[in-house]
Length: 232
Image 1 (cartoon, helix red, strand yellow):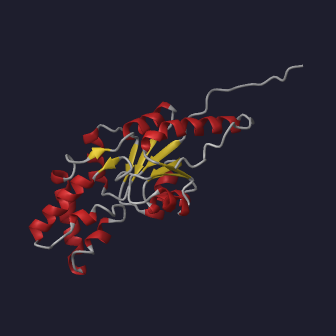
Image 2 (cartoon, one colour; image 1 turned 120 degrees about the vertical axis):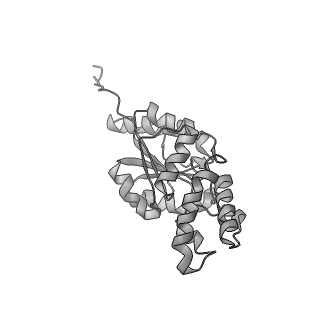
Image 3 (tube, rainbow, N blue to C red; image 1 turned 135 degrees about the horizontal axis):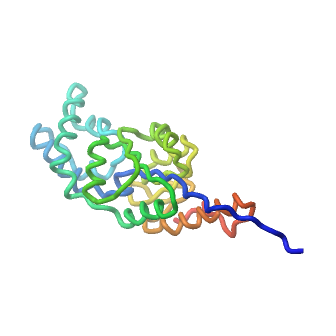
């Protein structure tokens, strides 16, 4: 006798979180311009080319490399005020960014951007580039991202920084890392990334495999392969 199987409606896709700088957006040209303007206004020498090689940590951490402690808050506030005029237009979407977000939506999952950037400026980037997401949470870094990821039910968090890996792990989310930021595949793997992709152009295919594996597990069927395998 043939075994009978029953199938229900397709499972909705996972909620996916994305970092912003150097994950979805190449913000280096804009950030460089904003720092150059801050330097011109304050008379403080800032190596903007160096700054854009280490994006990720909180703004105040970077400002502290150039300004004395008593001026950090003032300089950070001025930088944030300059940002809309100098940093939005020059920045571009990274390869595959729009397609990655659309893949999550096509799978039936919501998209949340969780970033260390000041939230109003993060929203300006997304609006300028026409990348539509369900929520944006800013001003959070590393393990501090875990609360936002949990609140939005993110099963997957995609980022380029070691801090993003830490945030995903703190939230018990699958860490998908891309090498479009300051770290290569080996460093991201050693930090605990579950998956490493060269860039977001590989994300839709990975997501399709991940969703298929999740559906197979829910149905009690052994998946043909492991969706969590790193694709460095």
